Length: 316
Ligand SMILES: Cc1cc2nc3c(=O)[nH]c(=O)nc-3n(C[C@H](O)[C@H](O)[C@H](O)COP(=O)(O)OP(=O)(O)OC[C@H]3O[C@@H](n4cnc5c(N)ncnc54)[C@H](O)[C@@H]3O)c2cc1C
Image (cartoon, rainbow, N blue to C red; front, side, top):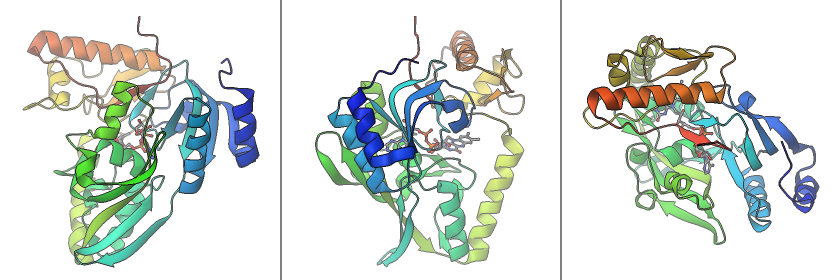
């Protein structure tokens, strides 16, 4: 891949971050689908201060930047991502009491499922649904991750967010304009404007007996195990259209087990597209096209992707 960023930016990032900066890092290593090309520049940050410094350097130099959490809700193009990819490993987590219970403040690179487990062991209810959802707090807050009838929207008190050209400010829950798997920040990707960056988030929890919340979490885990396949995937590929399940529509269109190259639509759950080994992003995209077209033809429903296609796609 050609280096598109300026030598000056690379030098500046090296000055600040030293060996944390890499060139041409394969992103398949950092995504749950295990597909995708390389990041032109790849930087791992371990605190929200480092995350902020990195985006500010990139933004002021006019270099495009992309925040990578767990890579569990994205499909990276085979030709990779130009500019700077920042792998977010800022993971500090703390707890404090407030009038309504306990607030968990987490840096955006913290693992959501680990926090959910921690809360259960502390007797703090409210995040059991997040057990088994891969990825970071940042990714979950952007996409309004959810399961089993609950979501981030129901738990977020506030998020500390960096706005390009404006600096850091606090968004409360209403500012996030949450909907089903969407938020104002998720819309940044659609409009193509420089993206806002979540530095940390505050989640509201309620004290409950450990046995009660453990039992709830175990029920959710058992349900997930029964209905979802293992293997390398991005989880649900499409959002559920109103009054339907995307998996049911794809299954009824006869596509369970359908494959292109090494990518296959799961036999267990048709909204999961599995990398069976050496799938390319293009293989997965062909499956997406097949599922979308078949469902449209048979049901007249145009499904919307839940997963975000990122990087240098050739959409001809
Ligand atoms: C097996 C499996 C099961 C899943 N089950 C569920 C489920 O039950 N419910 C559900 O909602 N999702 C589910 N998902 C999808 C996924 O795990 C969630 O969407 C998750 O919240 C994504 O987090 P991430 O850190 O991996 O985000 P990534 O995929 O790394 O990023 C997603 C988007 O968020 C942006 N982003 C990430 N961090 C930040 C930040 N700090 N600031 C600004 N932007 C940021 C990225 O730039 C990108 O645009 C599943 C996925 C898999 C693989």
